[in-house]
Amino acid sequence: MALQPKSKPVDSALATGRRGWLSRLWRGSGGWHPTQQNEAYLFLLPSLAGLLVFTALPIVAALALSLVRWNLVGAPVFVGPANYVELLTRDDAFRKAFWNTLYFVVTIVPLQLAIGLALAVALNQALRGIKIYRVIYFMPVVTSIVAAALVFQWMFNRDFGVLSALIWKLGEWTGGAITPPDWLNSTVWAKPAIVLLTLWKNVGFTLVIYLAGLQAVPQELYDAATVDGASGWQRFRNITLPLISPTTFFLLVIQMIGAFQLFSEPFVMSRGQGGPAQATLTLVFYVYQNAFRFGNMGKAAAIAWVLFVFIFVCTLVQNRLQRRWVHYEAGEV
Image (cartoon, rainbow, N blue to C red; front, top):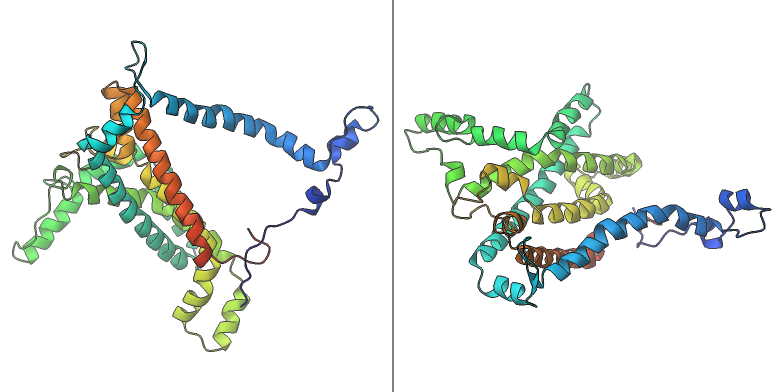
């Protein structure tokens, strides 16, 4: 199999700028005759306007807000970079939230990718009723995160939770050597509990994307490798993994960004407190606390900007590194 270096696709119609249906519609009016390329820009204009008004403008406004001290009641007071200096030098809660967020990123993202790929490979079989299993695994994605978090709160309850009951039963078999932890009230086990909830909620999405990638791999490559005597692991390592590497890169980026923005899971599981002892406080959670609980909008905007810069740098690094391990078919970007 020959993997070609990536190259940008060229739309011949756009490149040549031929006139499209809008131009033909206006033909004879004596006015402007847009090319097909200009027609494309016209159709993109509403989306670009929405992106500018609802995304770019709030980002710039947040930057301006991060330079003031404002509690939503009085007039904003310009303080310059004081909010950033306070965050980076004197705010222990910010450092705690930063390390908690980093913990969730480095645990959730690899586990989601590994479990999602394993399930996708298992469900990419021509078995009877396989679609039902795919639906079952995807159902958590469309489940309300609040409802799921409440169920997991019950499961992790040390006294009557299902998970704790299983561990108690296992402890009986081992002579009391194993006892369930007080999951959500322990600074050690609270974060793993949230990781388990996040995996259960999001693995279905990873599975579906990987499944689409697996089904795009040509069967002829597997047949040729089988004829050459390649084992199942060799086919997976040398054919499947390289050909789904663009899918893996896509999932890696969006799941990393999602993990950096983790909020609902720790908010509900900790009953809005971020505890115990700020063990489940994330950066977005801290933005919420500063903005709507402490009334410090400037500091909240500063945290949001620090998070934005960190995500941007991490994404940029991933984009540079992907040239070493992501393989594109000829003609793909």
